[in-house]
Image 1 (cartoon, one colour):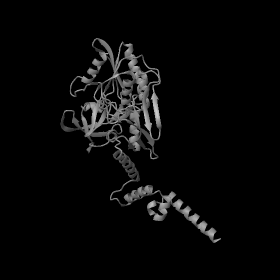
Image 2: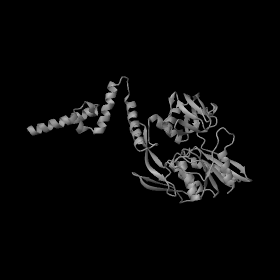
Image 3: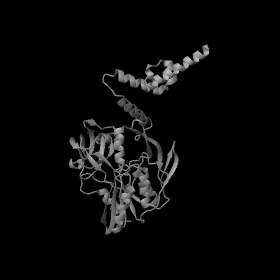
Image 4: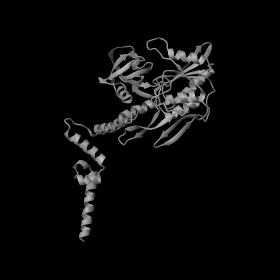
Length: 392
């Protein structure tokens, strides 16, 4: 009978402890011996520190802010330890903006940028955007947002500071492409529709050539490019300069589908290796346009899915590359949703070109070096690419 009472008392104690934890009892309030039983050590320590900050910090701190900071800290640890520039934590607000951009529209000032040491270098400016109206040009560097320096800040985080609700104001510090003093520009954010493809027919060396610029690999980008190139072919264009400068990538699926516009079915576009996802090979799907000579224009802003496409066209179709060295990413990320409405963007594997090369830190070195000189009316790199194409 005594043993039964002892067991019953123990069961009741466990039930009360469990109930206490369920209705809000905190691990920091539990005796150490019980905390070891009920709470994982690392999780308990994180929770304990969170409550101590809430209770004792000289300013009021919300639990949500502490959670965001904790998640950001974990990702920063990965970035430092493994030299990973690409893993990130998106708060719910940042995730909304990121997904809008992938879908081809967002609220901001109308730029594409590339991360540099001092901040964000402008790669292109959308027509009619607040940035264009403010006189911001290609080659300028955004060094601050609302008084906060962007030096050393992750490019995704820096870009997120510029974006915001339509109609809201933002002040950015801009350093010109040729140096000089930093100037402040006060802009009103607007809804931006990303111009995925711009295309035209160009006369060069007596030849009718086509030129198409692809700015991102958002949903449906391959279809827009295919339709644009097909229109140019109907107008008699005999070859294509595919401009991928400043294209920071996007969806891997779109890179595969875009390669399928130019390559026959069954050609390897890219292969990947991942500790958790194993080895995968991605091949073209078919339905390609009639074969034509292609020259790919690249620069340091050509990254990720754009590098995958450029390498596939070079390796599988012998396309020549013109410009400057590409970014050199070599790894891919997966977006994993979190219960707070945010997400982790985690590096989960490496990718390889059809010839088996990993581009991390190396990038694609162009067959023909060419550089556009900021401040001139001409686009010297594009002119060089057209000359190379005409020579084919």
